[in-house]
Length: 311
Image (cartoon, rainbow, N blue to C red):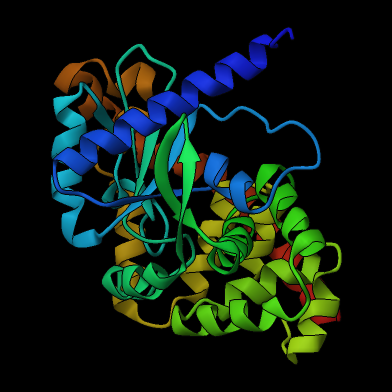
């Protein structure tokens, strides 16, 4: 039987993912596959599984430094880390790559959309970990309840189209109705009910599930702006408006105005990656760039706000 090139490429990626987990295991780090092959093992796709060149791994946050050191030993370097993110809560994962290689590892210390202590997230998810096979190697992933919860959180975190929403649609089609109670209980433990409800409001079949759970969703303006892929600045302005304390507003403003050097090199590689002089120049012109984009961001935010007021 002839094997397609796509199938072979997917197998190679799975093997590489298994190798990464073995490196971490030798360093004493237990890791859990999120999304990708792990998700497909508990919620099988209707057709052939698509290829994913990134490996999402969740590790115990207490072992994050050990995991990072293990990746460095294998030639991986951080492209972006949690502290580099320019949003209210930082990022839920760091992105690690081998220079010149397409394959990347997204090293998670928590799940998207959760402000809960990462150690608490890890403890709540441990009972939901199941064993599967990845690249011919036994590995760990999230069972159906936790994978369904992650699918909703992932969709809430991303624009309103694409793979994250396709995964949530698959969960809604395949998960037994009574299992949504277990998903709700887990998300309650994780303080993740709000983003879950927000995502379900716009997923096919989601509102009916919310009705059965006696839940409602009211996505914020900032979330709706991101779902619609509106200008980034408009969502940031909405976040600043919705932050409840002056300290959180100042933290977000600092992340936006003065990102970390790694974030600058990631978002402005043509200038910020040209040594210390290029990085300094990128910092100098960043306020100008933001100021030029501010009028459009304000117009978009006002449009969404007025639409809410007319409801």
